[in-house]
Amino acid sequence: MTLDWKLVVDCADAQAQAAFWADALGYVVEDNRALIDQLLTSGAIPPEAVVTVDGRPGFRTMQAVRHPDDPVQDFTGIGQGRRILFQQVPEPKAVKNRLHLDLHAGPERRDAEVDRLRGLGATVLQRVQEPGTDHVVLSDPEGNEFCVQ
Image 1 (cartoon, rainbow, N blue to C red):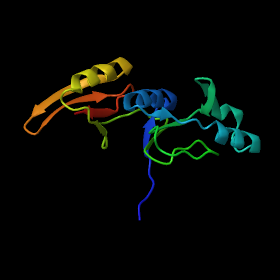
Image 2 (image 1 turned 180 degrees about the vertical axis):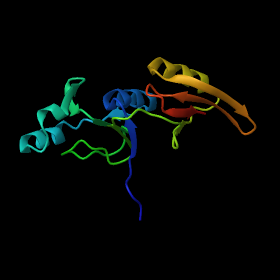
Image 3 (image 1 turned 90 degrees about the vertical axis):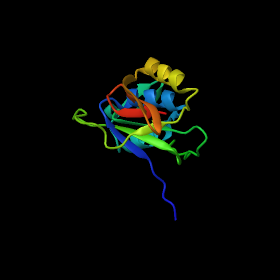
């Protein structure tokens, strides 16, 4: 038996993090307007729980990105495959991540990929060249570490 999963990332600005990571990974920001309309109509969420981003409604405190080739629930817009959910939390990031993403660009594309990610708002933290590994450690706009190999 397999389980469906999503990676959840705590953050200060869910919409900004989703935009960064969608661009970084070639993912798409989920369009949850059908679910939001259902929840607003039923009174399950108040109007102030919704923001408009890129001309469509989104949840103020959470936003997911998904792989563009994976299936999506029609009635919610929620992805059913490779997915990252960014959820707003009140406290700031305080220490090094215990979990991080490794992006595999390959040695021939690594420098160009690092430059592209810097253009999206990432910061280079360290270049690592050790026996068995050659990668760059970066942080996203909120300071979450990730690597490009």
